[in-house]
Length: 460
Image 1 (cartoon, rainbow, N blue to C red):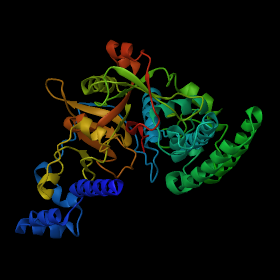
Image 2: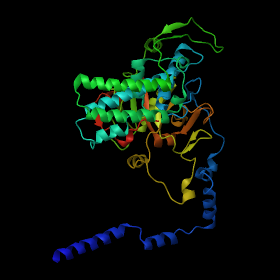
Image 3: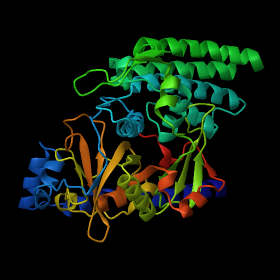
Image 4: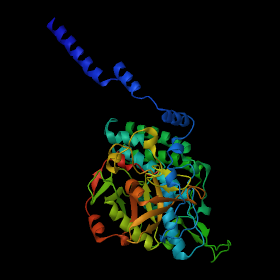
């Protein structure tokens, strides 16, 4: 009897506790009474029912004629278009390389085949997943790394580290040698079938009784099927091709030659992408002046994990200015959707006034946005210009984008320096433009972070 009374007392207490956290009728009535709209608010609500909130939140005071002057800008030729794919990282990396080649060789124009490297990217990532499943198959399916692998067997996103590893291993080909396909321009549906097949193969590897060489043969048969799927969607990558540069009228400026993709890269570039560049990160949730490495966040099994040095924004800006002044573009990534006026191609904290429309304030800083999953790097672009004031302080920046020539400002986006502070995350810079302090800090042993860390989603 006493136990029954005790149980009833516990249940009664628990119901009171839970009631304090629920939306009660009294609370609901209070919410309703405090949410009476005035005439202006009712008019706004009526407008929001049929229009995008950005139409009403657009700050008219910030719609004056846009200043598109930059006192330091790297020349570029042609805007690329990633279409409906998440390959911004690849387009950006190749845009950095083509800018160097165009300026060094004085070429009229040049674009590298993105689908050529994307083919190998998807093949290599498939192998990385299958081998990682083998490496972790003694772990349970509830293991966090195993779960992450099966949740993310393949993606079309990536980083500059992937560009460096893929180019170093497979070389480059001009775009005309291997043009885009519908599947490469629209990656989501096609790659979904590869992901499904990889998950099926991953389960088979975990359940297999084979070991050593026999298990590896089983994996190789799976890769053969993936290779076939990739050929169907993207075409088969060339092993050699004939090429020569052309002038503005389309005439060859030298006799055409045969190249392998690896020869083409080695002859056209004297740059070691893996050794000569450092990725700088601005992540205020972690200690500055420390290097970090992301487990399993790489494009090839035999390649490099994503590695970066976390530094304050002032250090990143100085490196960027030095590089731009020497006519060298850079790979950068940011949270591009925040405060973007896509019609003008302007990223500015003053573009929209959502607080006045909704009657609330949005007060999180960069650190808080990262901690609460509200912000992170979503898009890679090519940083090419800066406008400095009389005190050599940056006022605004310009990037070459990969959304086509008609998007934004003639295919570019302009960002204020204040916006950059809040939403830039990564910048890849040639070592020759970095301070001795950065170079020394980059030598330290990195801290290994887990593959599921929220800050480290690949650029899409």
